[in-house]
Image (cartoon, rainbow, N blue to C red; front, side):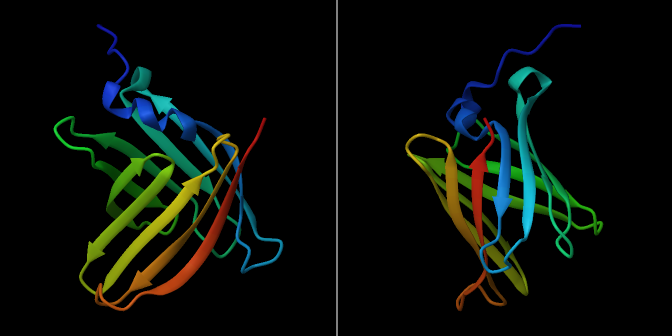
Amino acid sequence: MTRLPPNPALIQLEVLVGEWDVEVPEIPGARGKATITWIEGGAFLRFHTEAPDPAPDATLIIGRDDSTDEYTLFHYDSRGVSRVYGMGFDNGRWRMWRDAQGFHQRFEGTVAPDGTTIRGAWEKSPDGAEWQRDLTLVYTKRP
């Protein structure tokens, strides 16, 4: 079997690779873990989260069509929920979004210049017009 070379369309996501502690400031003591790893020799990224109750654990697979700067995330979680998100990543600005009838979501986070923290927040909307904060996330990279 021929081994695939790393996907050059994903190279800029290297800063996300690693193990991260995750805090939710709105819920004191709520801590989770995220692990982002290359799979298939660098063809895709696997983003796995372990969240405190009542939040679900989830696995996302990240890939990109090399004709665009937009990534695609395939999400599946411990509740049995499957979703597809769009994603952008540029100059330390990390965005994810989903425009689904009745339940729109978006995330925007900023990766610190040294790559050791990511601060961001999820928002939700029933109609894609009026948004409200869902939760804040603070990722701290493990050494």
